[in-house]
Each structure stands twice: as C-alpha cells, then as structure tokens.
Length: 295
Length: 192
Ligand code: SF4
Ligand code: SF4
Image (cartoon, rainbow over all chains, first blue to last red; front, side, top):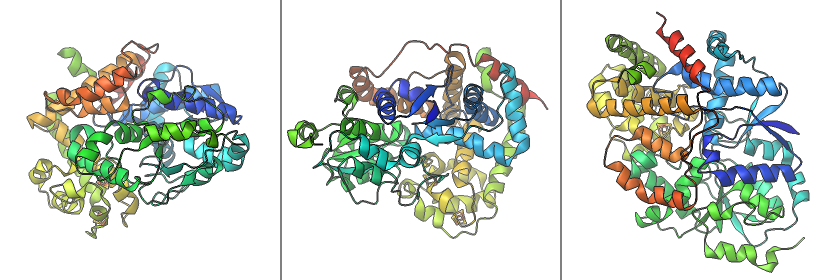
C-alpha cells in the first residue's frame, strides 16, 4: 500500500503530534507514504471569500503534483479541512468540465495540469477500509485494556461527502478501536460539530457545543479525534467550556493515531504525548499501569 | 496600499455590479426551498442565531437584503454541513452561508469590510510563503477577527502553544512558489 501524503500546514505547526504519529503508525502497519514534494497551502477556508477560482486552484496544484509523482496512488490527508478542500476539486471538476479546464489553465502557469486520476482519501478512511481492523489487531503489541474511548469524528470528514461512513451516526472508528483492546463509549455526539472557527469569532456559541461534547464523553477516559481543528477546540478550550456551564469533568483528548501508536508499541514520547494540551493524570496512570502491557 | 489592492480586490467600480450578481447567485441556491425547516432543526448553532436558517432563506427570496445582511445568522454558521446533508431539496446551504459572508465582506459595512481585509492579508501571506505557519485555529481567528482588542482574549492560547513549541515563526521552503499561480488566477479573473 502506497499513498501520496499531504500533511497540510497545521500538521507542520499546531498538530505536529498528529503528523508524526500518523507517519509512524502507518509505517508500522506497512503503509508507505511519499510526501508530495513542494506541496503548498490548500487555502484553508480563507480563500473562498475572495476568489472562487483560487479556492480550487490551490488544492488542485497539490493534486497535480501528486499526479505527476505517482499517478496511480491515492492522496492521503489527515486534516479534515484540507481533505474537504481537495475533495471539492475532485467533485466539482468532475461535475463541470468547463471548470476543470479553467483550473487547468490556472495550473498551466507552473506547467502543471490535473487529469483527475488521483483520489483524495482521509487518513481515517485509509485506516478503516484499506488497512482494516484485522491488520491493526495483528500489529498490536500492547492491548490497551481498561480504557474507555469516545470516538469523535467531527464534521468535514463525512459531510458533505459521506464517502466511507454514515455522517449521522459514524462508526468507522469502532472496529479499529476495539482492535486496540479498548472499550468504545456508546454515545451519539461523534458527528456533532465542535464549533470550528466560531471558537474565535463567536466564542459563547462554540463553547456551548464543546461543553455538550465533553459532557457526553465524561464517562470515557479519553476522546480520540481525526482533525486538528476538532482536537484544538476540545483540548485547548476545555477548561473554559467546563467553567462556562458544562457539567463535564476534564477528559483527555488524543489523535487516533497517537492512541494506535501506543498499542502498536510506540512510547509516549514517540507519539509526542507531551504536545497534547489535555491529558489527565488518570490517563497517564492507566497507560503506565503494567496491566495495560499485555500481549 | 496599492500592493494590497492589487493582491485580491476587484476594482471599486465593479463592486456594486458584482454584489448584485452574487446576490442573485445566492438566491438561486435557495430558490427551491419549500420552507420545511429541516435546516433550522439540524443546525447546532440555531439557538445562538437571531434568525433561523429557514427564515433567512425566506427573507432572501423576498428580497429583504438589508435584513439578511444585518442578521448574525450566517456569521454563526460553523460549516458543519448538517443542513446541506439533510435538506430534502438538496440545496447547497453551507455554501449559501459562505456566500453570504462573502457578500457581507464586500458590502459597505465597516466592520465587515475589515473582515475582508483580513482575508486579503491571509491570502498575501499564502502567496508569499506557500505554507501557513500558524495553527489552523489561529489562522481562522485572524481571518475572522473584527475587534482589535480580541488578540488579548487570545493570548492564553498563544502562550499555551508557545510553551508546547507549537508556534513556528520561521519562513517556509515554499517561499514564492505560489507567485506564478496567483498571477495567473488574477489575470484570468480580470478578464471581462
Ligand atoms: S431544509 Fe431545505 S427545503 Fe427545508 S427549509 Fe431548509 S432549505 Fe428549505
Ligand atoms: S452548515 Fe452552518 S447553517 Fe448549516 S447546520 Fe451547520 S452551522 Fe448550521
């Protein structure tokens, strides 16, 4: 299994632990990644308000580079916002030939073009469907017994393009988590919005959403996420959310590949656990308990 | 000053005409709305909105443009796509919310225009550096910022990130990479 890899800007700064743990876990699972040389920003959600063409041309540039390097490989993207931006190029250009031609005209400025052979795939999609829970289970060297995990999916990984799971009640993480030996919390907040960038502009509204998610997860030892934005909202604003009226108690928030890495034999340092902003002492204790180190 | 204008803005004279076209485009997006209210019921931010999404579409189709642009509703959209996914008419509602932000940012309202400037700043940053160095959240924050006092509010997170060694302030190896693409897009969008 070989993929072109698009980390995206946030995995180079605020979400380095997501980048590193994804690379390590995929390596341990026998997945080969080739980082797209010279990739650039996909525009985040900032370009759409200014230029419609640039919104598509920026991610299309990365797709064209990926296509030039490895025309048959899927492009693996861990950040849900980057994923959606690239996916939109795929979908919109497929539906509108004229638009596709316009995008290619823009790319011609760099001698690039995109024919559409490269498929955009979210990290979770690759883990759940290409790698699969069986292979994950075989790679586990340390079953994480005694932990209850709340799988959190967020929005843009399944909406508006529900490619690999039910966007109303997502479940694709469950078999993967069970393969690690953990209990999966039965909750219905996995696909609920965390407020995304409202946390900056309309903080009260976003805090209400985060509080509700944390409240619902209070029976769990930790929440796992698959998006830097979700991770940031749930970990960095946790104290504020709880103070602002949530009944929840502090809960650890880890990226899915961080937790997988721990079960696959990586150390806390290997998965950069020190970079996380919400890791409770209780979780650290459980992770270090010898009981966790079976298999 | 000139650099900024050249970076992204349309010529001032074209603004009004573009706005009308943009408005018509948004109206087209929701033209088939049958007012069932599924979007409002699905929206996690509806409790904080002054108008429900459903009534916003109605006002839009009735041509109540000022009322629509004065509403806080579209600024409270967090792009969760729940409404888009569930609308029985299959309307692109999240896109319509984004288009309303775009419209408001080019509209005359001072606060909104400031917001537009930040988008321009961001884009210039991407054009220059190729990659963004700040965390995604910081980035969104600066984009959406309208209040000059807001950075103070944000300091605790900034410090947390700094302590974790998560704010990289250096340049990027992709410096200047996007120049030709931006120039081309600008040239294409300037065509009549
Ligand atoms: S869900 Fe669709 S049809 Fe129903 S009110 Fe909302 S926009 Fe109109
Ligand atoms: S996309 Fe926006 S308007 Fe639609 S449900 Fe989500 S927050 Fe509400």
